[in-house]
Length: 297
Image 1 (cartoon, rainbow, N blue to C red):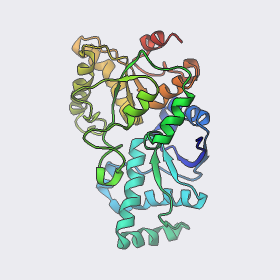
Image 2: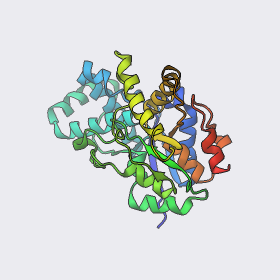
Image 3: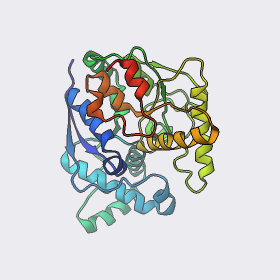
Image 4: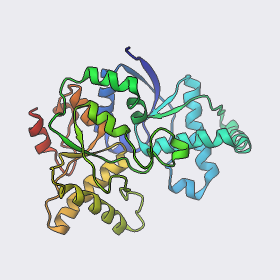
C-alpha cells in the first residue's frame, strides 16, 4: 500500500548552513517517496544536545519545547535529518511528558514570548521513518539503480539510538535500522568491531581523542579483507568529522585512507535514480571517485 505522509521538517543549523548538498539529497528522496515537507518558520537551533544541556538544562528544554510548539501549531509531527537535533527534540518531549513540574516551568517561560508547549507532536529521525516495514517495502519498489556491487559500512553514531530509554526504536547494542535501509537498496553491509564507536566530534576540548576515534574506525575499515566502498552516516557532525580527519590522518600515518564518507540519503537518492552530478558528491575531502566508477554512472 502506498503511503503518503506530511511532516514539519526540522533542518537544524549545521546542514542548511554548512552542507546544503546533504539537505538537497534528502529532499530528492522525499520527493520520490511522496513525502510532503513543510518548513518550520521561526525554528531555532534544536538546541545542540551536549554543550547547552550541560550548562543550563532549563534553557535547553525551553528552546527545544519552543521548536516543538511550532510544529504543534502546524498540526504535524516533526521529521529531523540530524541525529543531534533528533536526540534533543525527542528527549525534551519524553522528559516533559514525565515531569509535570518541569512541563509547567517551561510553559511559564514560553508564555512570555507567546508560545505554549502541549506535547502533541511526535519526533522522528528519517532513519526511524524509513526503516519501518511498510516504508522499506515502498522504498524497495522505487529502486531503479540497485547498489548491488557496493560494500557499505554503517556508522550509527551516538545520538541516533542512545539513550535507548528515550529513543526506543532500535537495539542500542545491535542496531539494524540503517542496515535494513541499505540492504533494501541492494548494498552489502559489512560487519566491523568499531561499528558503534563514537566519531569523536564532541571531543573538541581534546582533539587527540577525536583523531584516535576516527583512526580506529577508518583504519579498521581499510584493513578489512573485503574492500569497503564507503562509510555511511546519518548525522552531519559524523559525516564532517570522518571526512575531514580521514584526509589529515592519511598524511600523518602515511597510509592510503580513501574511504568516502556519505550521508545515507545520498546513497538512497542514487538508488532511486538521482544523478550523482545533481547530488554534487564531490563536495567532500575524500572524493567517491571509485564508488561512482563502480556504479557505472
